[in-house]
Amino acid sequence: RAFHRSRAYLSLLVRRRSFFEKRDIRVLGWPESQGEKIVGKFAPNPGDRVVLMGATWDFPEFLDELGERKKSDGFEVSAFIHDLIPMVTPAYVPDGVSEMFSRWLESIQRITDRYVVNSDHTALDLRAHLARIGLDTPIAVAPLAHEFLTDGEVAQRPLRVATLYASERPFVLFVGTIESRKNVWGLLRAWQALAAELKLERPRLILAGKRGWGIEDFQRLYNRSGALDGLAKFIERPTDAELTHLYRNCLFTVFPSHYEGWGLPIGESLWFGKTCVASN
Image (cartoon, rainbow, N blue to C red; front, side, top):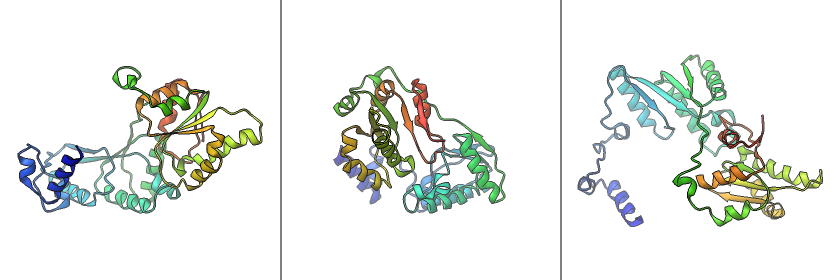
């Protein structure tokens, strides 16, 4: 599989049409312009609505091309924005992201007729930003879904031994990327204080997610404390089946994030009937 994928990438880089044509794979026109390459043979009619559902931060040529097509074809553009975290809390994103996000927002606001966001909170952030630059573009809120597939094939998939071992004893669950904005360092400090200051017997703390950025302080504390004397367990990149198991069997969940656009793990926790201790 790796060999064939590498061969396909190489063929794409050297623009070998025959490789894709004989496999009935259509590469959009092999155009010269990067913007045209992404838009391809896209030809909406007047009155159509184009909805950008994902982040197009890295595609300035695409937005330029879309703007040109909009002038001539007369369609509407709606853009989905998950959050404005790179602008509101730039200390919690990797280097360069705030600048890239700002440039993207500036580009997209020139062609957008309507925004779609996932929470009233993000709508407030976006409305404040638009007001500062003198725009009053309509904003629609479409909340995220929290339901899990708790039966069928996904739920029946086997769990890793590390997940089963970590959840053997009573535990509290944190779900999310292990990054500075999620306040995971503060969470470890709080778990230490439960024993050192309040003399409480602590349940295990399970952190389920992928490794992110800005976690040097968290990693040092985690390592030097011996993972809180063995009480903290990290489950990297849990599957849906593993998250279902962890949500179902935890005592409660914690979500002490510094800032969120929505905070999906809070809703997921409540959907499983588990209390979530969250920051305001």
